[in-house]
Length: 211
Image 1 (cartoon, one colour):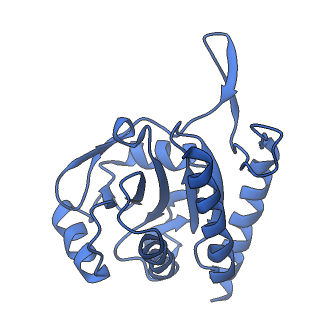
Image 2 (cartoon, one colour):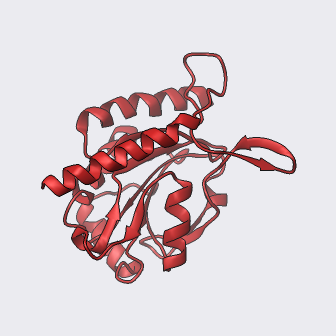
């Protein structure tokens, strides 16, 4: 248990360092900041967006970055056999889904980092155990090790294979709020119920901003 707390503490410090590159997208206090690294595209400086991907969900349907553009989404990283933080972070995701309902303008995206074991049938079984009925809640199968290295980093998250870690993966418990332009706007620690409650306010603020 002490190792788990130490791991969460390290991840928290890393995320705090990353958010030093936060930019307030406008001067109004009511708007959430854009969080992330700046990059130069076609000679123009802009904030990095989430990565391009196209993965299958628990029903075998393809979910892509293109599908998410124009919608808000909340993302996290987990795996079905995780013995540590995943059950709690997934309960937090379920709580958020129940709070905001099946509104298709807000999608819930859970990336499985266990590309060897978490097949579509296994994700479907796990989804059934979560007892979530909403069509806007997706468990995505990450297909290979290269994608595991690429995608979490763009979401400012930690997810990597580690034989010394419980379950074989070292990963953070962040839940991340992404806007319709694919920029990260807020985050919380999914294992901290108080932080999740604060995060709900950020979600509502972004919904208000976009409508």
